[in-house]
Length: 247
Image (cartoon, rainbow, N blue to C red; front, top):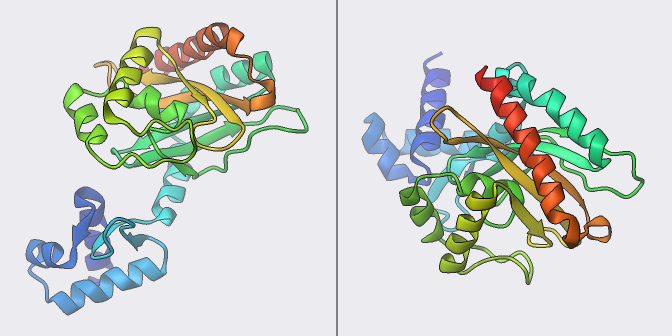
């Protein structure tokens, strides 16, 4: 039991301080370095942790944790509040609609999805993660964070996924101001090739973003001239989710 408890506490510490080194965890828990290292390796082998892609001496949360979170959310009031508006949005557009939640300033995690009936459609696996700066859902959330958190995020490395991906910090901050002003974010082939999306945030009582609802479609069905109308529909769905969740 002591071993299990220690593993869970180390897992929680990594989630709280990631990316974190063995030395930092050793000081935090007052444990031998070999014990901490062994626990980290065991959790990594099980998929709960992983070495940071930017620096392999640091540890961060693995994909298994991100895939478990959506299952836990299915019984939550947010999940319940979102289902009806998502169904209505999907039926009105006949395009894929998904709900994603932010994982700190790391990524967005898909927690629910409704498919359209087109033979060619976008697909998001529950538990999938995606970068905040390169997706509509991510930028819908980023745009409603405090300016200090936006500055912190944009000061980091903005990875390029395609020629349309925004990687310049000042350009990203300008785009986030536009997103906040109009209420929705647009992704036109910025993350996955030939995939477009429009997303709007679900907000808490203090205006902080809890999640984002997005409608996505193949580029062949995306009409730039109709973006404003599509945006209003997604914003309305997000507002309904917010009202149901807070009500």
